[in-house]
Image 1 (cartoon, rainbow, N blue to C red):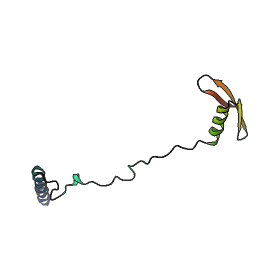
Image 2 (image 1 turned 180 degrees about the vertical axis):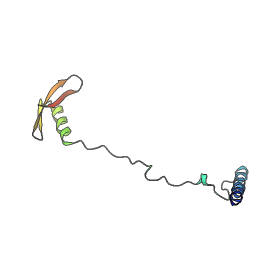
Image 3 (image 1 turned 120 degrees about the vertical axis):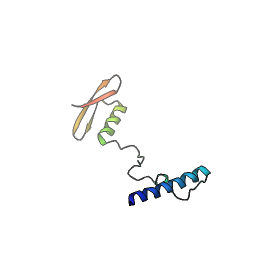
Image 4 (image 1 turned 90 degrees about the vertical axis):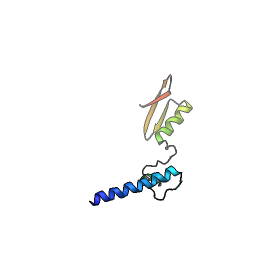
Amino acid sequence: MSKLSNLEKRVAKLEKELAALKRGDSTPATHSVTEKKGKKSKKNQTKKKGKRKINKYFQMMLAAKKAGKPSFVYNGHTYKGTKHPRLGMVYRKG
């Protein structure tokens, strides 16, 4: 029986809210669960981050590419470049 009485109470409460909304009251006497507004949880928000730093190899490779160098040395390895029609220069370990 308690479930039935709880259900009847909830129905009466919702009917009151509906009547208040029909009258045009901006704030009904009771707030329903669906009307609650709160802050978004932090896990759902995404922070905007700046660009990621370029690693040392790419920094050296791009510098060599801009200067038009045929090769560059990084970490004890020599990278030799070959001309590419679209990309300019492509470097490989050589």
